[in-house]
Image (cartoon, rainbow, N blue to C red; front, side, top):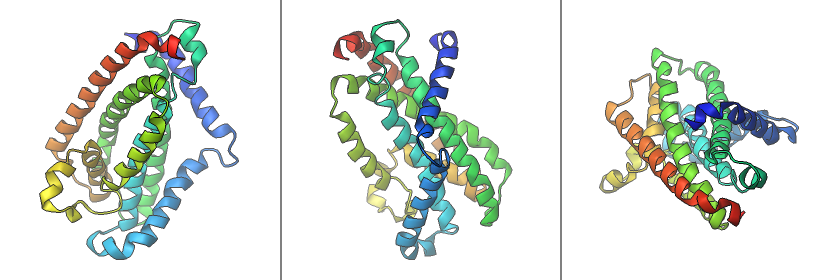
Length: 253
């Protein structure tokens, strides 16, 4: 399988992507921590009077939602350029082009894991504490990785042909932020729209993150099974679409 055959190249590209991401910044990786914290503060000040009464630990509730969403938003947006921004690796040598997308998503995965790790002391400091259910976090994050990687394969392949896609995706990401239970509890969604709302796979993932990190509960098996099914389906669809479209990558770049 190409992942094992090209694992060293994936490692090199992933490390390179992480270095490029932070090398020109004065604060470096600290911005990855400050960004969700500052966003949490703004959203907390705006929405606390509306939702705080219905939601305990509202600050942590917000922060878990924001950090969860960032993996999808940053990972998919960055991966869109994975093929286009490395033309020499596409036109001059042969490698499985999925390597380019994989390395970018892995870079975002590492950043996301580090952001979640910062949450652990905050859970203790702000009184929520931690429980053994936190051990389920890696499994949930692996499912999320499948979803982000599968989606990124589709976006990276389409972006080679349609360069306006990044503008469209930016708008969809902003819409998706407010269509996910990040700043408001799921209980505020009108019952007549709830079934449609739950079709968003990120909704179930955010809920599972909160269950293991904030509520100290076992995630619902139905949500786990459905999220895993969506992840595998997106991975299969993304791989098929990418493989079909990559035939003309060299010509289009």
